[in-house]
Image (cartoon, rainbow, N blue to C red; front, side, top):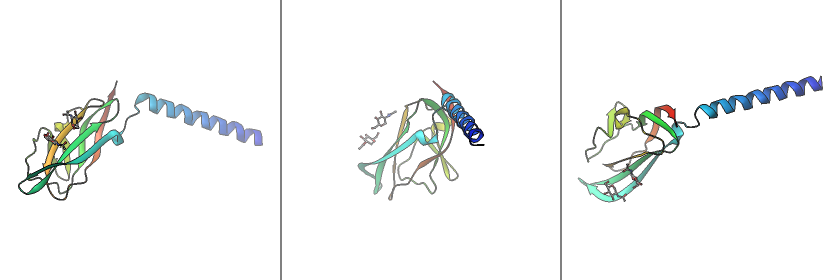
Length: 128
Ligand SMILES: *[C@@H]1O[C@H](CO)[C@@H](O)[C@H](O)[C@H]1NC(C)=O
Ligand SMILES: *[C@@H]1O[C@H](CO)[C@@H](O)[C@H](O)[C@H]1NC(C)=O
């Protein structure tokens, strides 16, 4: 009885390990690898503080159709829609174009307070 349980457990663990390898092997990158950093630029635009935002794809897989949650987003400084365009409660980054692994995209906006932006969806791959 004890021996059967051990064998089953071992098979189960082997299977998990196998699955993990398959998943990691296909693509190790996720939406969590899209990192967004916001820093104060020190400038003001129409009385609102300006913020420099850097979005980095911090993994080797390309990601496209990157959408950021940016509910209520406003800016007194115009932003090139080819870089960031609003779509409902979301913002589309670089018109949905692919961001290669470790690429970055920068933009600036001006508002007080700054907005909490985080990636909400993307299409991952291909991976190099
Ligand atoms: C903010 O972005 C502007 C425009 O790209 C740049 O000139 C400025 O040096 C940046 N400031 C900081 C603190 O990164
Ligand atoms: C974006 O800004 C960061 C920090 O200032 C810089 O390292 C990076 O090269 C910039 N990327 C682009 C595409 O301009």
